[in-house]
Every structure is written in C-alpha cells, then in structure tokens.
Length: 184
Ligand SMILES: [Fe+2]
Ligand SMILES: [Fe+2]
Image 1 (cartoon, rainbow, N blue to C red):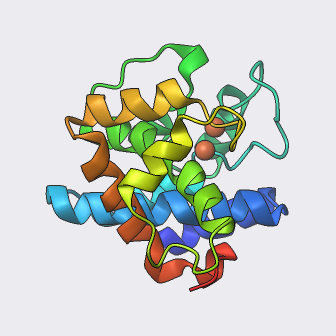
Image 2: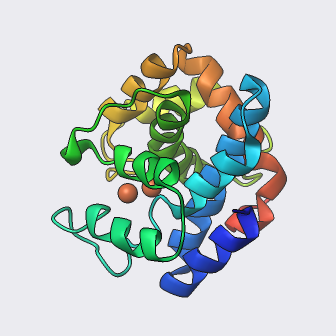
C-alpha cells in the first residue's frame, strides 16, 4: 500500500481539480503530523488521499463516504484504512479512537479553510499567521462552507491549541502551494 497507489485510485475516481487539491492539502498535513507523532507516514498519506475519493461519484451524505467503502475494499485497501476513511464523516457517528482518525478529522476542514485564506492573499500562504486565520474563522461569510465547529473540535480532539494546529497546517501546506494553485 503506497501513496502512489492511493493517488492513482483517487485520480481514477476524481476528475475535479478542486477535489484533487483538497486531497493533496490534507495529505501534506497528515504527512507532517505522522512525522511529528512518530507514526507511519505512508499510512497517514494514503488515508488522506482516499478520504474523499468517492465524493465526485457520491456527493451526498446518504452515500459519501459509506458507499465508497466497498469500492476501497475491492481495490484491496486494508480495513484500518477504510475504517479511518469512514470515521471522518460526522453523520456516521463513528468513534475517532485512534490518532490516525483524530488527525484526519482535524486536518480535513482546517486545511480547506487555510486554502481559502491563501487564495485571497497576494503571497498565498507565505506570511499567513494563525491570528489572521482565527479572525477569518469568525467571519461567517468567509469560506461559508467550512464547518467552524469541526475546525475547533478537531484541534481539541487532537489535544492541540488552535493556534498551534493552524501553524502546523499552514507550514505543511506551504511547500506544495503551487500544486494547490496558490501564489508564493
Ligand atoms: Fe468527506
Ligand atoms: Fe475532505
């Protein structure tokens, strides 16, 4: 099971550039956290790349991500990967009882929000600081699709201060800014 294989699966099911970029952003964050935690980096990256792999095919909550699970099983992914993928969905109410699951949940919404912050800045993520991310989180009209409660809860469940988590996520995404369509 490799990151390359997961990327291949993702891109076979997902044509949308925005969804591919979302997967890459979450992957960068998960990779950084795996290194920080001394966890298996490849596993974290695979789960990140696959967590929304079926979203294009199943864009509604009655199907995503649960109907993607049998496809992943057929593709030969192990149960721990599938279980982690399923756990990111709030509506399934599965326990986030591992560091892997907590990390995915914590990086999913926040990386999307940080991405949105980077898109409106002339230098992308280069000088983005937690303070300005926090300020934007309090503006409901900015990136309105991002669930604020999930951003706050994600950091909490991971046991991190929000500022530290923001810092980590921004730092992880900076090196791949061009792939994410960001300046700087
Ligand atoms: Fe999802
Ligand atoms: Fe996602």
